[in-house]
Structures are given as structure tokens and as C-alpha cells.
Length: 263
Image (cartoon, rainbow, N blue to C red; front, side, top):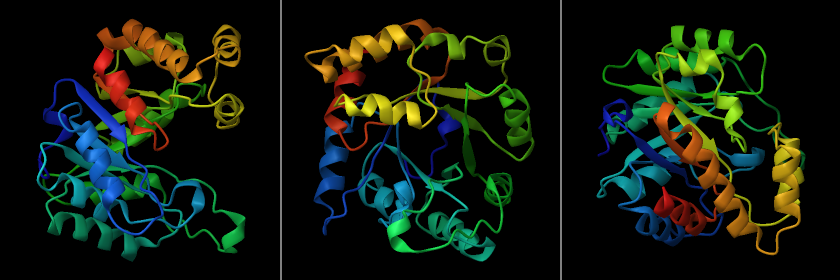
């Protein structure tokens, strides 16, 4: 399904794969085997947390070329100029990848003593992607921002075909009138937690966790099971008016598989 479009899937189940920094591709293949048959699509971030990593186009090509999974590599303007971004798009097209997800990218890890590039922004990247025929491009939707409706409108004008929401822990953030009346494809984003310290980590990312949910997580004897239950509960309330689910398990792909088994 390398060249299939995410737009052709009625209800999308996707997971973000985070490759390890170890040599070899065993971790990628293991993740793909675990999720094969459970997902329609896999995404892969580009240098997450501002640290060097495998190119997401390469990573996703390795694991999806012989599977019934749509690969959706991230493209960020953080580290690259226009020429390099065009090169990425050309590389993806060469191997049959035609779905992309654009995002600003995490700040660069200070230990690398490097500078951001950002010659162009996310809007320009989407325009570059859409300049090629038969391409599909997605973007992030932050349901916590007051001005998000206007930002989404600008992204739609730049060519966005679908959106993935920032992780939610309460259905209210996707129940806003403008979201429910939208004319675009939207996947509800979820970030399952595997340890209690990630509650604060999530909040530092700008994710709103209601006090009741926060207490459930922090007082849990099994935070993984509690996190899975919360995600299942929230998704059950929003599933009728979204177009899919996107899970960001931070490398814990077995947790993503567990969630997908329950929905």
C-alpha cells in the first residue's frame, strides 16, 4: 500500500513508530509485525526530541514495502532548506511513498550544539508536497489553542488533506462546534503512558489533562492499564465524529497494539 492514499480509508487506525538508535532494522520489523493487521497506516517522526535518527522515509519504506500498511513519514522544516525538503519528497516518490505529515519539529537537543534552519515553514512544505501529483499531506491540529480554527483554515488553503490532533485525555477538546462541523479528515491523537513521570512530561508538552484523569493516573497501581482504559473511554465518546485514531506510544508498540485490540 505504499502509494495508496490515506484519504481512501474510511476509518484510519495509525500508530507512530519511533525507531531505536541501535544498528540494524530488527526493531522496525518487530514493530511492523506486531502492528500488521491492526493498522491502516504507520507514521514516523523526523529526529524526535531534536536528536539525530534514521530518516523516516527510509524507516517506513523498510517496514511497509511488503505489507498492507500506508507509510506516512514526517517532514519538518527544522533542520533543512527548501532544496533538501524537495529532495526528500523526490526520494519518497521514487520508492512509491506519497503520503506525508508536516510538523514544526521538536527543539534541537542542546548537546549537539547545532542550529535550526527553518528556511520555509509548515505551510510551504505542504505546498511543495501538493505540487506533485497524487500526493496526500497531513498536519497537526492543536485543540487547546483558541486560534486553532484560523490556523487549520490556513493549513487547508496550503493543501492539508487530513489532520491528527494533539494527544487528548478528555473528549471535550474535540467536541467543539467548529471541529464537529469540519469538512476535513481528522484522526484523534492519543499518548499512552507507561510511567507516572510521563504525566508531567505530557503536561509540559501542552497537553491538558483534567485533574480527575491526572489523579487516576498518579494513584494507579498499573499506569499502563489505567492509561489504556482512559484512552478507550475517551475514544468511545469521540469515535462517532472523528475519522480515525492515531496512537503515539513512544516506542511501546505493544501498548498501541493493546489499545487497537479494544476499539
